[in-house]
Length: 211
Image 1 (cartoon, rainbow, N blue to C red):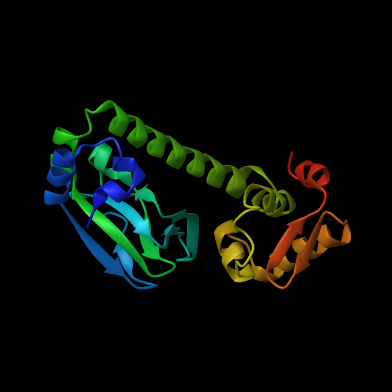
Image 2 (image 1 turned 90 degrees about the horizontal axis):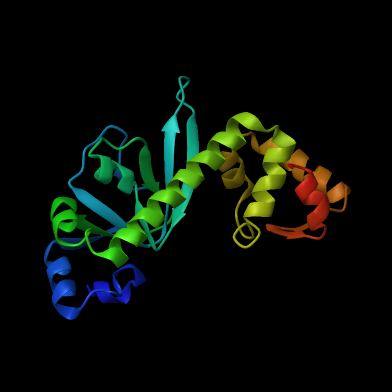
């Protein structure tokens, strides 16, 4: 393990890297593995260095509600560490992956005071808040047509190759509903679709679908 390879620790010198590695360990995961459950406590800060995880909860009918997906390289649920609270949701692997576990108490005392590290940590927390705001907006504030259009617009670079069932899961809608909404956007000549690849051909009208 060489934590110097990860940009979040580029500002650390060799001695600091060795110190950080002494309070860390790496664990590999397979697709479907659970990283943590809602309500669990953890003494570790989780840094996803490979793979994709999903953060999710269950509603009162036990339906899975995906809040968002996290791609490497990223901290996971660091708000739970920072606020010293239980994990607010579940986390599982969408692909095989790898996580660096860092003793948070020691990390906080030894590294979080450093300007570069603290700024990265704050930026990561801010990004998670934006994800949550987007999730709330998509789930409550806009209709299904707008929800699908906004997802395509916001995820143009990563949507290709994604299965429709996965997109529907993220948006918390039925796959059949998603298919109809995509077909409608194709009919309006706003997007094109070939197999799993979606191409935006009219950005202006796509934006107007959810603005």
